[in-house]
Image 1 (cartoon, protein in one colour):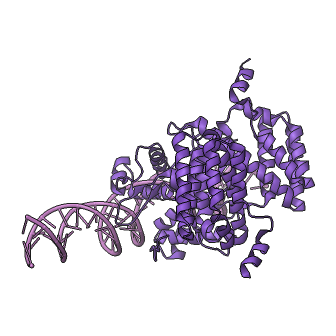
Image 2 (spheres, rainbow over the protein chains, first blue to last red):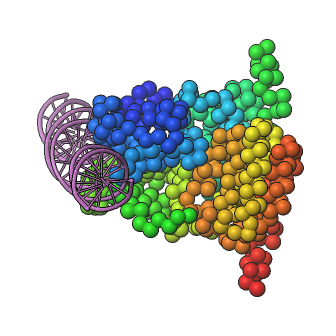
Image 3 (tube, rainbow over the protein chains, first blue to last red):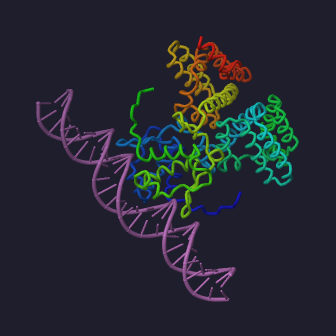
Length: 240
Length: 240
DNA sequence: CCCGTCAACTGGTTGGACCAGTTTCCCGCA
DNA sequence: TGCGGGAAACTGGTCCAACCAGTTGACGGG
C-alpha cells in the first residue's frame, strides 16, 4: 500500500519484462528460437550477463527452454507456465485480456477459498482457529475504512487458508494475491459489496471455529461468489 | 517418460537447488540476510555470476528479496512463494513432509478439477467440447496400458481445464502436474483405482459436452476424490 | 549420393574491474 | 560526554573480454 515511486528497476529486470511481455503477447511464437544471447545483448544495448539473468527468470517461469549449444526456444506458456506467471503480470497488459483474467482469478479464489474454509473447519488446530476468530474481529474493527478492511480481509483469508493445513492452497493464495492484478483490476463495486459484509465474515469464522465444515464451505462460497446478476447489473447500480 | 540420465545440471542450477532447499528447509531463517554474493561464490567455489543467476531464480520464486546496497534477505516462503514453488520441488526432499504435500496436491486437484468441469460444461466452445470427447476416447483406447492411460488421463484433464476458459485454472494445472512430485509421489493404488474407471471418465466427458454443469461437477469430484475409507483401507486391500 | 569431419554457431563459465547504493563506525565538533 | 557528519567498508549492479562446452550445418572426400 505504500507509495513506492521509482523502484529503479535494474537492467535485467527491464529486459525480463520486455521479453516476458513479448512472449506472452505472442511476438515470439511458441517453438521459435529466441535470438541468441549475444544478439539480444546487442539489441538491448546491455551486457550479455543481464540478458542471461533475464533468461533464467523466464526459464523459471516456464516461458522458455534453454539448452547449451542449441538455441533458446520459446515454450507454449499455456502448457508450461505455472500460476506464478499471473503473479508477475502485475500491470494491465495489452497482451492479455485483463477483464477475463480478473474473472478467472475471482473464480479460482472462490473455489479455493470455499474448500479451504471446509478443510479449516475440519482440521484446523486450536491456535489456528483462534487466529481466524481474531482476524475476523480485527476485520470488523477496521470498518468503515475500506482500505483497512481490504487488508484485514486478506489477512483473515490467509488465516483460513493456513488453517486448512494445505500447503498447495497457501502457495496458490500467495500467487493470486501477489501483484496488483488481483487487488487492483477487480471491479470496485464487486469488492465493496463483499467487503462490507461484516456479519457474513464473522459467521464464517464462527462456523470454522465450531468445526462445521459443510456450513463453513457454503458460507465461504456465498461470500466469494458474485451474485448471479453479474457485472452488468452491478455496474448499473453503481452508475445510478 | 524418456529416460534422461544426466541432464548435466549447470553450476547455477546446482547452486539454485542447494540454496532453495536450504531456505525451504529452514537453514536460513526468514528475515535473515543471505551471505553476500562474493561469500557464496567463494563457498561454492564458483564465479559470482553463477551465484547471481541462482539468486535471480530464487527471487523469481519469492524466496528471497535482493536490494542493491543492502543484503539479500530470506523471505518467509509460506507468505511470499507462489504455487510454482511446488513445481520445482520435484525430488522428494527431507525439507518438507512429502506425504502431506502429496495429499495437498490431490486436494487442490480435486477442487480445481471439479470446478473446471463445471465451467467447461457451462461455457466450452464447440471445438473444445469435441476435443474433450476425443481425449476421453483416446484415454479409453489406451487401456489397459497403465502408463499410457496416465498420460491420456492427464491430456483429458488438460482439455477440460482448457475448456473451462479459465487461465488461472490452466496455469495452476500446469503447476500441479509439472515436476515428478504430483505424478511420482502419489500412492499407486490411489491412482490405479481412478485410472481404471473408464466408464466414469467417459460419462464425465459426455456430461461436459452436453452442458450439464452440476452433474459434470459432481462426476469430476467423485472421480478425483479418494474414497472415504482413505489410505489405510486401501493399503490394507493392496497388501492382501 | 552418402557420410564423416570440421568450422561456425549456440549457451556456460570465468576473472577482473568498476559503478551505485547502504551500512557502519569513528572522528571531530558542540 | 554526547551528538552529528562523513569517510570507509561493505552490499548488489554492470560491464568487458576471453575461453570452455555442447550443437548445428555445410563442405568435401569417399
